[in-house]
Every structure is written in structure tokens, then in C-alpha cells.
Image 1 (cartoon, rainbow, N blue to C red):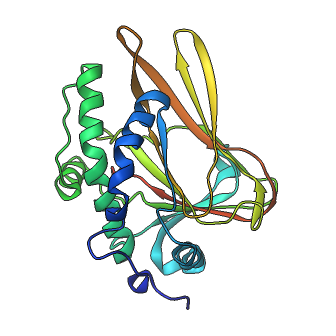
Image 2 (cartoon, helix red, strand yellow):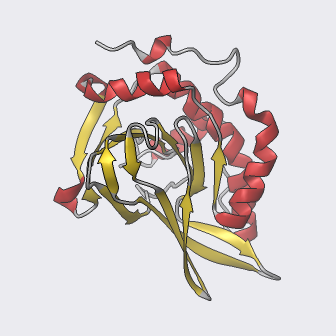
Image 3 (cartoon, rainbow, N blue to C red):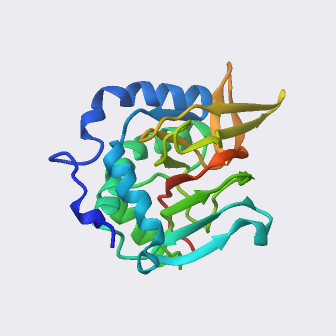
Length: 244
């Protein structure tokens, strides 16, 4: 069996502590584009150890083959509770950074919902509403695979930001397979291809985001992955609301 997540080294506090300096820039990028890159959130060694978990079925609650549901091509697996301790810490650490941005967005959009400062309290709200299934997942793409544009909405309680971390190395492990976002605003649709390196994380809007152009407008967002030209691509997806 591959080395467990419990042995993956992190910093003394949490997996995002060393990135204090980039969060202000990330918030600005999210406001402008609906996405932001956190460079080198994980080391290549951490990425390799996480990707190796994909074959460890005991860590997961379900496997989804995308073609069976017209989601695209490729597959993904949802982790089971309890999450590996490294992923648990990472999920809580990222949520703490993102909750203030999510709350500000809701205020701008006139949405009354405000998210608690800690993930445990938010998940308690999800579970009380019947959303009890964990949503962190790992995706596997092979040559010719892709992910259709979509939104990850799993129930009444939806956290408006999520994170994807590229575990494979572009141009080494795979080619193609770019992370793509689209937005729909009053002027039409636009697309944004987000370049990522191994270990980079992209934070992005799940559903809608505010856009201020004199007045605040809603921009509907979707995300996906373009066709993989060669190789194999693994991604860790961190969703903060649980599913029914």
C-alpha cells in the first residue's frame, strides 16, 4: 500500500500558512475573474503520494464513470469519512481563508446567508439538513478524456467557492487537459483557461459571483477540463459543502 496521507508532511500550523502573502492577491483575482491560482500549494512529493491513493478503494465512498452520466470522459471517486487527516486539515485551513470572501460576495449579491468562520460549524448545518455525504474527491483522466462544463451543487447548503489542486505534472505526465471556466453576464459568455503546474491550486466560483461595473451584477460560472491529448492527469477537488 502506498504511504498514507497521515505521513505527508505539512507546515507546523496548516497547509496554507506559508501562503499568507498571496491571499490578498487571490481575493482580488477572484473578484476580477472568478478564479485565483495558489501556486505550489502542495509539493511534488505530496502530489505523488496523494495521487497514489486513487487505487486504494477503502478510502472512497463511490466511483463515478463520467460517460455513464454524460459528464464527459474519465472518472472520479468521492472520499469517505473520516477523511485522511492531511485532507481534513487542508479542507479546514482553506475554508477559514475563503469564508470571509464568500460572506463578502453574498453581501454584494444581496444574499442573506453568512457562513461561519470554521468548517465544522458549517458542516453541522449541512448535516442537519440531510447533507451528510463527504464531497472531497479525486479525478482521473486518460488520453481523450475531458470534463463537461458544470457546477457542483449538492443540496440546499452550498459554499460558493471550491478548490482544485493539480497532482500531475503538465508536459511530463500529460498534455492538454487545461482547467477551463466560463462566465455568463449580460454582455454574453466568456471563457478563461487557467494554467496550472503540479501542486498549484485554483480557487473558483461554484455557481455565481458578483461583478462590479458601476453596479453589482451576477455572473453565472461553470468549470470543466479540456480534452487530454496524452498521458494521465490526477486532480484533488476540495468542495466545502457536503451532499445529500
